[in-house]
Length: 102
Image 1 (cartoon, rainbow, N blue to C red):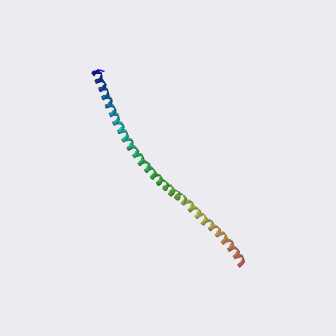
Image 2 (cartoon, rainbow, N blue to C red):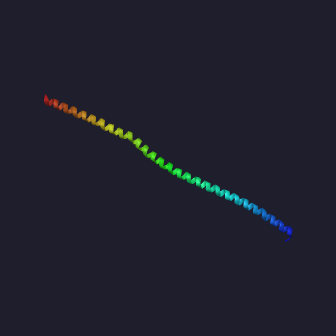
Image 3 (tube, rainbow, N blue to C red):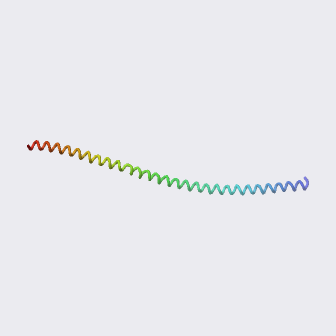
């Protein structure tokens, strides 16, 4: 090997070294980006879990709000039926008592 060939080889190795260090810097920057992205995903996961719990609470409250009119309807239905039955029984008893008194 002569000195010219050796100088070319050293120059090529220096260029390769610079390229490798530049690529290494890019990889380090990519790793930083991945870490930031991972932290962001973790925050999103926590917020999603909190939102899920809130939605479950809203769902339970909505269920009770939806069932309230049905319960009121059943109550008023019982009251109306009870009123009709009471009226019929009172009419029959009145008719019977009026027949007995005559």
